[in-house]
Length: 315
Image (tube, rainbow, N blue to C red):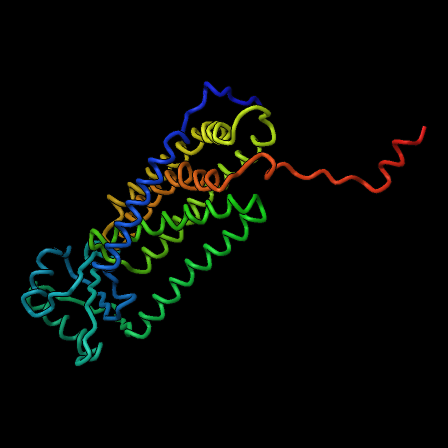
């Protein structure tokens, strides 16, 4: 493989200090928002009632929201489910009303307010204790993923790359959570799944970059660690852009045409792909460089075979 000349590379690492400052500001802003605004947890975490109903004709979501709001259900979240006649209604937790009774009340309100025959398809209740358990298990899932990634990259490459990868993943997760906190978007299980997918996407990109850096450290004889990292990032740049653009096209279709049920999922992935691509270039590589990665750390040790010296001395 032909190694790029130094003059043909993009000087990514020359901007690493500005990039790290920019990332630090965004991370601090995310932490501040999470501490003050917190996350707008959905019914999956807070508990509540989910009611699925069917209409004779296409449902007018604006009308349904107005009908429910005027009858004391201001917290109702109304979304289409599948077809234009199937609707899902999410209500917050109500301790004084049983789920079945609440479903009958909502069904009567919708029937009187729309003048259509409304069929009850299903009704589900999520208790607050179940929601707390889901939040705890979701947090443990992300923590376990980060620890496993740290161990894998440390064995696969080098501990400096492992720390850089985990810092980059933490950066991506924190900024995504910060986005949902700042905008007040609902955080449910689909968004949690999207964040785990962002971890996988960002890790894949980081592994590709780390592998190329290790390979070039062994092949390029002249050049500082900063220059070798720039060469590696330049070589993987086209692959990174093609992968990111392809993924973004699919996610854009989900975002605009996927409906309200997966809007949060698509939002988290769209933003996650952007920050994941950025972090694999600047955060992970910059952290490894700041920790003093060098050629000696990545060149494998030569293990002499037993008896090799004696064989060389024999005529």
